[in-house]
Image 1 (cartoon, one colour):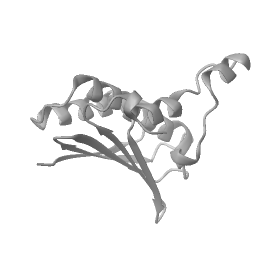
Image 2 (cartoon, one colour):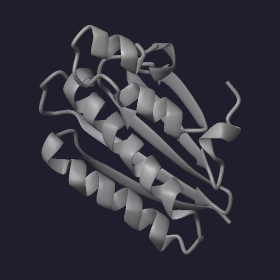
Image 3 (cartoon, one colour):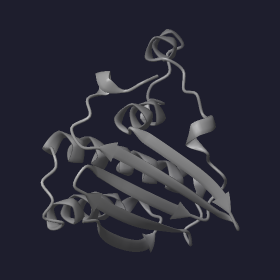
Image 4 (cartoon, helix red, strand yellow):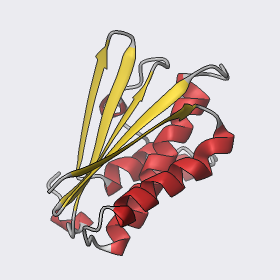
Length: 148
């Protein structure tokens, strides 16, 4: 059985903890037993993605919003994130390798790489001025099981 939890809030960094707590409590509150590592890793990915929306999608505008829909099923967790910021198709972004960043002396810039590593599926659509991204983690699927 699928259980869905929805939260709509201001796109502000001060609410990132609220977003993480909402995600974690939604999964726990679903009553569906999922591997703790899957929940923890996806929580990090959702946090990073929302932080990117706030920093780069809204570019400092304080009237933006983020809508989160967390769908918990027996075999997966899906998170739909909707915002009205600048278009940001994560699938089109190919982050540099960690080694390349170190060689260039760049700190950070690993968030999208982490999101793509953690999530088993990612979908993106831009429609009527909104970004709609879905991050999916299949329960118990190890990173080594992923097909490149």
